[in-house]
Image (cartoon, rainbow, N blue to C red; front, side, top):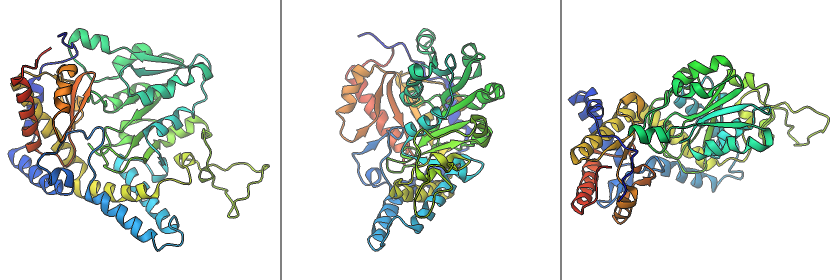
Length: 434
């Protein structure tokens, strides 16, 4: 067997991260999230279920179920189930999402179908000139990469991918990206940098604030994929300094698929020069008439903010679920407590992996890693089939090894049970070091 070189040993950095909390704090978090685990029947009521795949999609919960059920029940007796009541729910959801990410105003947030649509809307708002370039990392999520690559021929855009894979293989470690890593690829024709605040595959927590501080004053926009950040940790887009950020609500915010959000900062919006949406809905225009007649000689009075990118017929069922769960996340779970709870779980798994001799991929320092993701650097070709055979176990096997990702409903008992899975694999003779 040829071992995969992208791996690092589990270091004391992972172990020390867990010591940040006092014993009393650990106990408080354990008791708090044990109660909330009961809201997720799949994991709370099944001894066989081991759902460790929150970075892909978490199991649903009773908060969302109740919201959807209520919407369906009330819609049965509404002559117009998409009327003013549900429009108010949409605006309340927008307010809560804006609060969740630390946005300036709710109007800086547009609801989209998913992250892809949000990224694409912002990317297509640029007036690129032939010879302009954008900078992204070679391990960036495909939704970001393809959004820019699609403009190579049409706009003459150069897409510069910062190479990191080869160096990671040489050094034996995957690390987070900062401004210094990007600097050699940025020049006077760079219009934008695209980067995830937390990486989907190896869980780096990139220094987006530092990147913005270095390059936004030069007029370079920073577009962030926030999908692995929102709902897993506190977020302040103003402090981060990004031009725009897109995210889906079906991961950290536990909503049904089919709803995302796009944030555009007021400063970036002004710099774009009154951008025209790539697809224009009547919801984008402030001067839409009540009789819905549009005169061809009248100007289109777009909303002066992110709302111009919104479509009229969004999923109000998903919006209703979002309003319920985002409120629960902010006011009951608490973003800081969720983050601390998740860091405790990933740190515990890293320590146990080190004990077994299994390397952990990605940074060890807390401020350079996502709280909910831990990637074990085992051979995916060897371990993947074994893990897929285990009934009820849900993890992601990727190019780096096995990605374990926790949600608010996860527990130390889940860690213990997964370590037993690893121990059984080792007893079968599967290799643990590359």
